[in-house]
Image 1: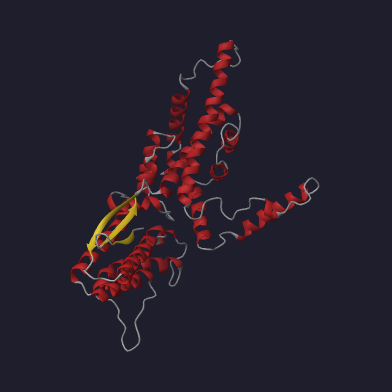
Image 2: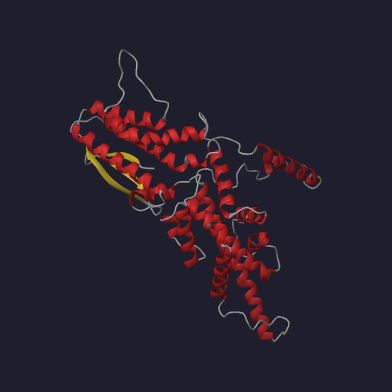
Length: 380
């Protein structure tokens, strides 16, 4: 989202947002001479709140809700998104107190716009109102652009958010980037919505684990955990994604189920109480088994989490872990390739592989690309 601030050295209202690499800023308007700190900061605060609730419509689209009946979650989300149309009018003609009363909207986007409008009304500066309105319209246009899968310009701030859905356009772009560099280019973090990038990364992790499993003689679901013995890796989440895919989930289903659960945790909810009870029961049984050796052991000693992802940044956290998982596959592949090299040098006919491509990294990337291409129908 865009954050607004007051630059007192220039007496200006500025707006800044993340680009994935760092924040960028623009001047929204010059503030009227003599404006108080309280009035200036109040305007900046209400604008930030408006941006937050508007970008929430992007992160929590109605399409991701299970129910769209009247008064359902999907119905409420669509109402918030539809309120974009009334935002400009609320900025220039806000609801104002009358006879001790004031009309307030239950729709957060609409009410946030009226609060900005009231802050502007208090300042009574036509030029400032015009500049702020133009900037808010640019913000809404950026959100609409991001919804279409175009994260250029101001819409690029979407790379710092976690979306409850993944744009097919963005997934396809991420897939193309991973085809060029299966180990994960930096552009995945600066040009692609992280949820969409994670969907594509899960697809490529599945391909990399399958290729490596053929050499390691292990199930694909165990590859990243095995690679953790070579280099410390965040193997739990990639392994969970591989297990979900092995059980029949598509990369999109595996990724979005984890992200949506983490978003519910961020809202203070427990996404799956039954699964949590099962994990607690399993942990208690494990403690009972260990108590002879560790009498003081309790549940508090275990890393029992409601979600494996960071609720504050679940999509980015998942993307980082999945790319680490692909790296783990490469590490394990290289280790077995080195073993084959040593066997070749020793002249062991049982280990000799004359068809193996030269260059471990190049061979790994070529095989992963071939495997990913064979599975692309499940991704797209």
